[in-house]
Image (cartoon, rainbow, N blue to C red; front, top):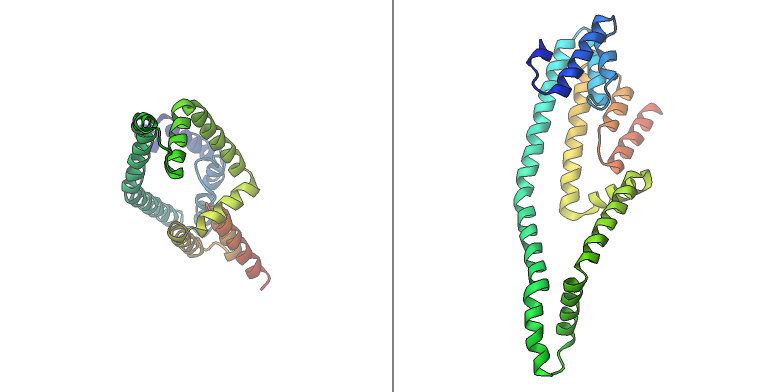
Length: 228
């Protein structure tokens, strides 16, 4: 019934595969575990705990509430950051316009006077000339730097450095810590409430934390709990 009511083709195929797996004798948690890109470890552990404790309906309801809460929180964060991003984009566009169009026009007037210009003015004219004649090099350089940063961020060492830097930023870092801490507490409470052992719950919750620094902190907490 769910597959028939789902309009998205890819999701409908996944639901159909879950039905086929259960029909073939596998548990729902095993069927869900076959799609790790769709169902994160938290979902798989919740379904497994619900099956074991006989509370699958309650576990699925909690997962639905969790998904709705995450979507609402994500929407609020995006809405709150839309205006600053818009202002930053306008400021960047105006800066590029000034450097590539307005200042080159004014530089002709400055050069016709024949006077020695102050050092800040000469530096500004040099930057404007560079952007005007070598704009393609700037674009290529930014694209190459973005690609290299993305490749470096994909590595464990690069991800650790970037995530540690993000949470060190005064205002932005505090927001990340609050979001990740609330997600940690909410997910851990749901797992423990479903009867998942604390060590396994901490392991699952750590895997659902996006920031590598905070994920390592939860992993260290798990080791401390395991040691008594």
